[in-house]
Amino acid sequence: MSVSKGIYRIAQAIRWVGRVLGGLWFIAMAYALTSTRASEDTFLLLISSVVFVGITEGIAWVLEGFTDE
Image 1: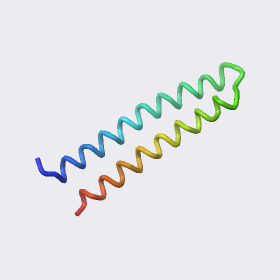
Image 2: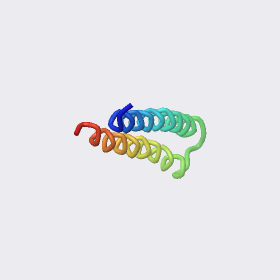
Image 3: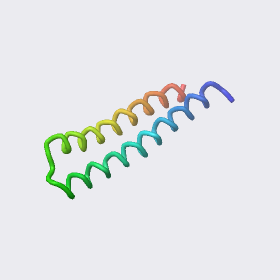
Image 4: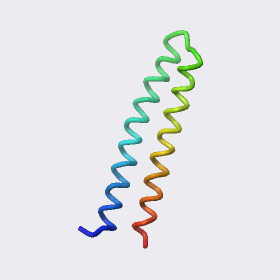
């Protein structure tokens, strides 16, 4: 396996782990937001889940940029 292919696989792993964990986090916070009396902390955690997915997508995007060379 080449280094380029290894970096690409790491990027894909980061992307999918971020999507899965961020998605589960988002669903849990959305459920908590709708099922109970929501506080500001719950809304902040909901927004944090979206930011988390964005960060992991950004990291994967940067790593994939190294594989295009």
